[in-house]
Length: 246
Image (tube, rainbow, N blue to C red; front, top):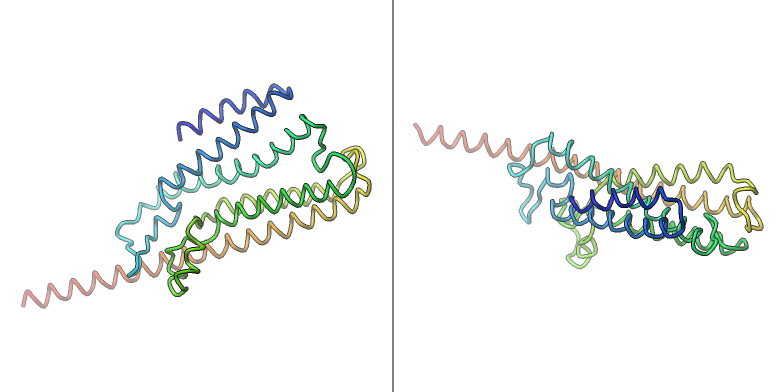
C-alpha cells in the first residue's frame, strides 16, 4: 500500500506536466500503481469474500473480519483498484496520442480507430472479469468439476471494482453519443466509429456489471448461509452441554 501511495504521488507530478515525456512516464507509474494495489488485494485475501471464508466443508464465519473493516478497507481499496485499472487504459491511449499522434480512437482512418478501441475494451473487459468473477473456493462453484474450478483460480470476486468499470464504460458510451469532427481528426466515418465503440463499451460494461452483481448476490448468500450454520451449531452445542449437565 505504501508503494501505491508513492506511485500515486509520482503519477500526479508527471501527469500534470503535460509534456510528452511526462505523460509517457505517468503511464508506467499508473500501471505500477494498479499492480501494487492488486498485490495488496492478493495479500489481504479475496476482498469482501474474507467475510465468507469457504473451505471444502463449508464456510467458516467465525473467522470473518468485522463489518466495519469491510467498509473502511475492502470497499475503498476495491473502488480505488477499479479506478486505477480504468485510468491505466485511458492513460495508455493518451500516451499513444502524445507519442505518435494518436487520437483517442486511432492514428488515421476509420478501421484503425474501431480496431484499436475495441481491442482496448476487450482487454479491459477480460481484466475486470478476472477481478469480478466469483473466487474458486466460493460455495456456488463447489458442485463444478475440479478442472472447471481451476479456471476460476485467478478470480477475485471483487464486485465493487467491476461496478467501477461499468461506470467508466457507461461514461464512454455517453461520450461517443456526442462525437464531433473536431474531436476525432483522421476518422473517416465518425458516426460509424463512435457507434461501434460506444456499443462495444456498453455491452462489455453490462457484461461485467452482471458478473459483479452475481458475485455480490453469491457473497450475500454465502454470508447468510454461514451465519445460519454457525448459529445452528451454537444452538446444538448449547443443548449438548445442557444435556451433559443433567
